[in-house]
Length: 490
Ligand code: AMP
Ligand code: MG
Image (cartoon, rainbow, N blue to C red):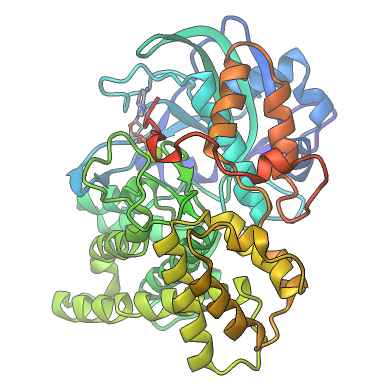
């Protein structure tokens, strides 16, 4: 079922989620946007989704992007989910300010959700106003665009539209809607919600829907739902290893913000670490440091344990047997994460395949010890090492450390192994969304000047290619980065 989005467009909005899982889908519509204005549009993504970028810029196109133009036959829904937030269980979260417009088949033949955030209150809104402000929606646009360009699985931002509606936060801010594409919006919290209903048939339909959309090989396994768990676990182990290697801190790794697809989702208080310190936290609400940089792998393991619990009735009729099987699979998270992390760390140091594992491990461990002792800038360190590998000027890398002797000794050992500088440059970005630059671009955009935002997005779209004149984007905050704070749910 579906309907064509617009005459020049070939895309069709389907309603597979709502049809297969009606218990998790509340039909709903977006709130009116008094004066919608397009602030950002990813034209490549639009084309990939089968949407005509020129049409999306028309009044009807912009109204589609805020949910007020619902193509005939489309059935927007608010999705139900539960979740552990900072360790405490909330049985009913759901899309409080978001809607799933429907699914499109993209240019690669894959099903992608088209979803809105900030589109007004829904039955899941609780005390919230259902709205979102321009700044945080543009932050998601910038950071998710950067993550995609870095090669990290993520939901994507198609567009941000200012609604013309004021949003009351600490001050009155301009409102916005983010149009987001994702391979789905199925979360660990979706499975928790289905499990909590006590309806095993619903749980099974949800799990089968997830298998079909994300992990089709699991359908062939002897125990498909155990295989689904393992596939999610594997995808998330790899994802978190990738986050760690670019210094990304998600900031709010609640189970409702953990996907079954293995895509990064819900860019709230996220930020990139500058000075290397595993204890780094930017989120103003994460006072206990639960979601600190260095905790992300164990938090993901904890979230996956919650997924396993929710899936137990599908794993085996005998509860003891189901638990034993789930625990055994959960035990594979650490070795999978370690393998992904170690392979990534070796690549960041450009170590040739022939490097013996013991020597590689010692070099990697010592590099991270140096980084931590020196509180060196994570992104600059690895990128500058590429020049050192080439035999170029070591000063930019050396200069990141208060004293050079330990660094020089490490470099001598490392260079003796013949690191591959070109390979390093393909995995160590020059440009990540530096916190002060993101803030600067969002503040300008909120005040009506989109130029810094557009420039920043342009830089972040090619993060591995060093371009002259962009030095500012490759440099840490000249102020005090440790004072940086990010805010959630705004
Ligand atoms: P988040 O922390 O953004 O992942 O959101 C957690 C939950 O709070 C989800 O159920 C959201 O839909 C809901 N929520 C966040 N902000 C708002 C808001 N302004 N209005 C209604 N619901 C919200
Ligand atoms: Mg969320």
